[in-house]
Image (cartoon, rainbow, N blue to C red; front, side, top):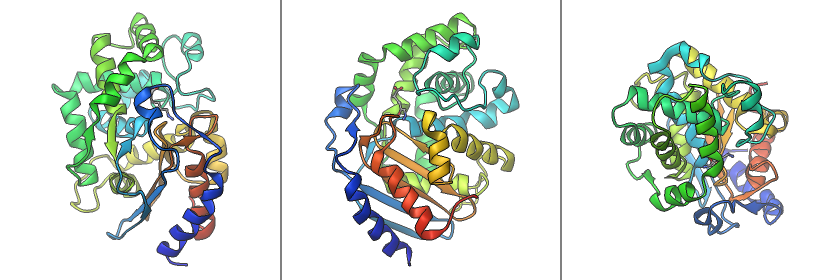
Length: 304
Ligand code: DON
């Protein structure tokens, strides 16, 4: 089957998953998104793009942004980054507080909220205008200047961000946050509120399929080793307490967000992004996971 045929078959089959999950309702700005949206886009290293459904509609990428923040902080901070955040799956929900107390304010990995807040703190350390720099970076990776901060989502996030405030304050008390708490939270809420389409996301993640080099320009963003490590962390930690099941069913490094987006990487080949806002009990897109499982089944492409 060709890629367009595969995407068409996936879109048809995932219809059965729609209506089973729940659109994120922890902030009003996300709760308003229609649950029946579905988009899928695929970008290959040799410059081909395929897409279907609502693949050009921009949505809130939420935790997918944690990959971009890490890709920006890691080359600047180097290996000492891992002294402030771990590299182990948490087996806990993304916003869990419990583990952080046992582990003295060092988050398990950069993709749970606590770990992402430490990475945001590193952006403040290394960039004088971290918010602007992060947006420029995502625009460069995706090749799209349409990527933007949805300020309404960011505001809604701040108004309801009590758990994130607790996490960052707790880590501050353990000296694992250096910048002012309010500054870290403001940047974090904005990064979660980045709006992008499946097409833009697939293009942006090609970097990770290409060992850290942007395929269109040949520019190196991450070293080969850093790109490998980012993929490894996506595989083991990209889906929180569902990371094992995602590896089992899909077999690709990937990252989800509570906006209903998921991006996955086939090393040396392609990146694929899917969006369906209804989430399962782990906060990952119900139909999105099914779509990616079908993709690896149809194509036989997985890292295993
Ligand atoms: O920090 C939060 O709670 C959200 N802005 C992001 C959470 C998220 O996307 C978790 N991923 N599935």
